[in-house]
Length: 113
Image: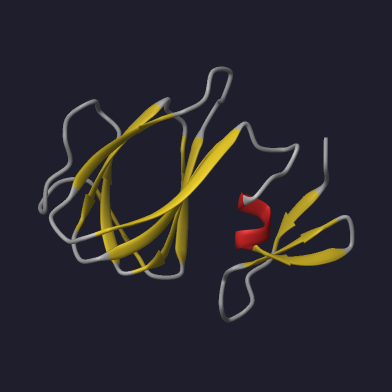
């Protein structure tokens, strides 16, 4: 498996893979350490459910811009429920499905590993 070290420079969006510094966008375009990933933009008040790829043990959500809320209990997320996540932050969830509520227009990356 590829050795990936997550770095936290000011942007919070760089990683180091086998000695090479990459932008997260490069990582999302393909890496043997990931089973599946996507990056998308949704307007505020959108609610979406994301399911991990078969065999994945966790889902990681990167909030590239904007603000979102994340729920992992199988219920749709709302503007008052779930874990808040803001621009430049990421969080791992040990679950196979999450619901995301877009508090404001946001760009997110969702990775199942």
